[in-house]
Length: 174
Image (tube, rainbow, N blue to C red; front, side, top):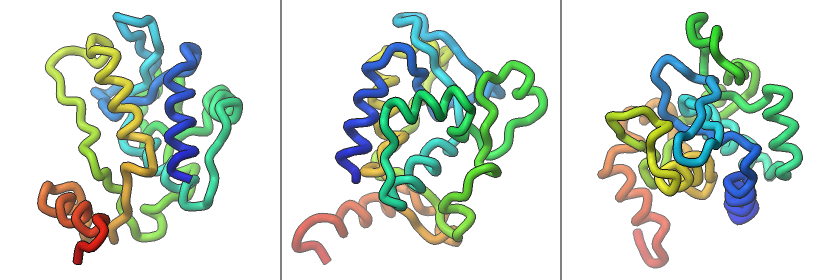
């Protein structure tokens, strides 16, 4: 399933008509921003798209690129846990996690193995394309995610926890 998702994400990146979802919002979740270098649409989100992709992968589902197009056209990919009224005014995408059942609803936190942060001082629309596409894959790929009980949510993405998680995946590790 992980390989299917990784292939889907590469095809998504290759389709210039599809927006890239980026986990970097500044009161603009769901807005359609234009990347300066490529003209590609970027959609700022919180971690909701990661919850969506992980939920599908856990159910053994990987949508096709046509299904992604349809989901985006019909506003069925969550871009936020909740979108505030001020954000909604300019938002093209308004699907929230409240409309989809995910790991949090079942007592789990979605965590990323490789950090998905794209710290920046300037607007996300000015970031290099390679930075954005690498972020997009790390952000949405179920192979870069794991679940932890919600009570451990605060430590799930700390360097120590990630290191212990990665060590547990290595053959012969205890």
